[in-house]
Length: 226
Length: 296
Image (cartoon, rainbow over all chains, first blue to last red; front, side, top):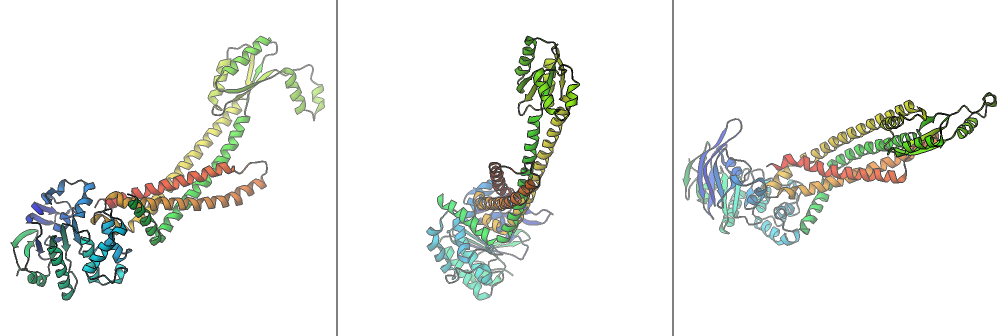
């Protein structure tokens, strides 16, 4: 599903964020991307979304070299990758419901056809009762769940999450992990970038550890590390 | 397709309402710029009408020698009339010239008594077509009559030439000022739109990241831009109507012999032009200002 070959990213100014990363993620896998802050997790996620261009190397998503994708085709790549952002990236002037239905509207599905779909996914993340709230009227954990609902609402084959449990309490975190697990069982490939040790240890999924932009460990049913 | 169009319009109106302060800023910029443009255009039209009138009145006299035959007179007439620039050439006979002179001098009868016989020459009064009222036409007329022995003198040329030159300069000054005003207005309007879009750059980034195509993002902004442009043009029209009623018409009452208003039709054309300019700048400004934010 995702194949990275020799991916290197140097930021302007010379900071080396990714250093010759090779990685294969199969369809239906659940992968944790771990490592301390600044180890390159977010850069990797942003490269997968083609928000950033790698300095060297190639990335294949569903068999396609995304480096050769023209700017006008990028939206179609992103429709296949649901992404949960570290800073949620919710639209402040749209309600919870509108934020989620927005992801469907942009791919051309009219509002009246998607009502059930949006309501179902909001119930799935436990926000069935807060659909008409605006983002500034709900908690951080709830915003995170809106972000997940939006990423998942059109059932993309790949779900990326960048620090989805950043500032959440342990109980909420476990709830979110169960949610990711459920989404994964529905057939979606899930990649979660995190530095939440407890979460990774309790889930026993594949763990890819990054350090200073290099893959230092790739372990099936792994733990966070030392 | 139809649902997308409905989406674009709904999105445009909703964001227009939700970001009303920014919308208002853009509209007032458009309104003020367009009002200045419209006001100046009307002033330019008034002056151009005045100059046009003067130009049409400006005629040139071709004076003939006294002792020429009818055939010679006819030749001069034909030579003048074959020039494509000439609108009319009216023959003023010696008798007619004397009659006009007497009318003009009727307040000083003593002067007329001093005249023995008729010293006034016959002449042709030449008027040029609109668009050809310039010194080049005068030069052509002179050239074509240069070798004609029946012609004594061509009078009025220097004054008329100067008048034409002034009219040309005035026209260019007006055109330059209007072009500069369009440019200044456009810069202001695009800046206002850019501010409004800058305030929403997060939204655009998110749209890009959840897979919205560029045109999907652009349409609502373009519609919003056109809407701002039209509302600005509407406000400018109201201001112009006030200016027209309070200023131009008052000036006309004070200076009755000078036409200081434009016709309703002309006014309508100016308003139509303002709406067109407003709409085009609104749409173009939105597209221009969006460019930078669509590169994610």
